[in-house]
Length: 180
Image 1 (spheres, rainbow, N blue to C red):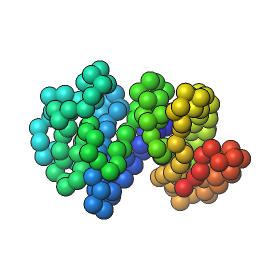
Image 2: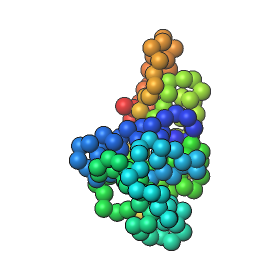
Image 3: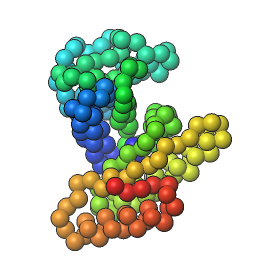
Image 4: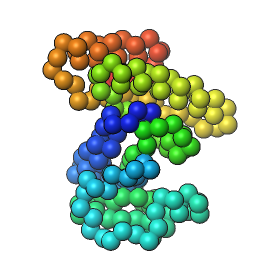
């Protein structure tokens, strides 16, 4: 998850999904972005289903009509419940779908590019997200740990300096976010 668009959420989700499926885990990818592109990463083995994420949200239940199999073993896209891992690709903007995905997650992974504007948006957006949703813990829902992944780092002195700044900023956040 990230409040910034274009930082690599979909690419990271696709790569993690493929890696986990290659390891033999049953993986479900959920494309919860209003501009869906996760399904473009993999050849689809079945035609588009008659239902999708919207129907799951509206009906509150998962049906076989919502599942699209990919051309790769163990890797499906959209919704079901017989999986070892469910990866949710969220939109790059704050909204109820992103909030629901964040509250449902065991672990939050957020890519961050070491560029000054992306780093500032990530820090501000992540802190706003945590501050807004952590009070939900009183209702029995808890936020999973947030893992920031420094992603697409150029081999420049500026990029190294910004990546170091990102690590130092999140050390001061007392464990709310760890940087990978």
